[in-house]
View 1 (tube, rainbow, N blue to C red):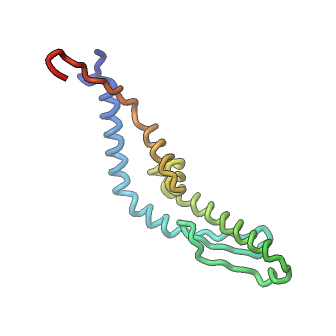
View 2: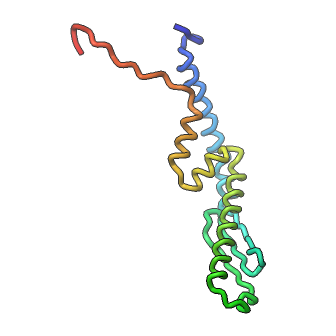
Length: 148
């Protein structure tokens, strides 16, 4: 049996991973409140290509303000205006999310933060499981003549 300090290599890896998780948790406890406040304060304003639409969103992508230049009324294109508003809001949301990811980058990997922001629990769990060391395979108990 190959052991490292009286432990199997898998047990040593799991112990190291547990220590890494503990250290990360301690950093989160110390640094996360300030980062969270900084992230909550994020506001992004984005303008449409023609400059006639300006949308300001918060960190969660909530629309805070929408400004329409009076020149938009010169064009009688309701569908075009609606599309410009939608594109502008989406661009602002994307930039706000990028800023939140940047703020948390010292603590949380960008891919994991993006998955979290996007509500993709499967991706978050997959990324977390990829960080874990290989686990020991489950062994089935052997039956003995005396019992199960």
